[in-house]
Length: 121
Image (cartoon, one colour):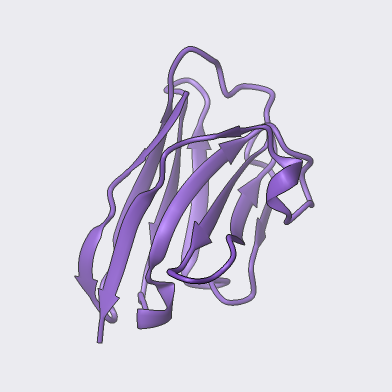
């Protein structure tokens, strides 16, 4: 089970860190990713890490502002979001078990409950 947390209401330009904790399953050996879904829109890729965190992939819209990392020993993944913009407003989801390099949600096997991030202008 994956549980994302850390969402909330922030102002444009602020920073926010999201966490994803896994329980009942080790994240070691699995590629992981963050997706987000804005109201009325399809879920979209945000960031991905390969199984050991040595490789990352970011959507162009967040590159340079967001940083994904993982701690396999703690069974957690984080998404540090800087310089947030109103268009970053969405429910953020963490996922596990996909093919690194794939940016489609169906490539990932396990999903957690999302956490809402709202960025006010």
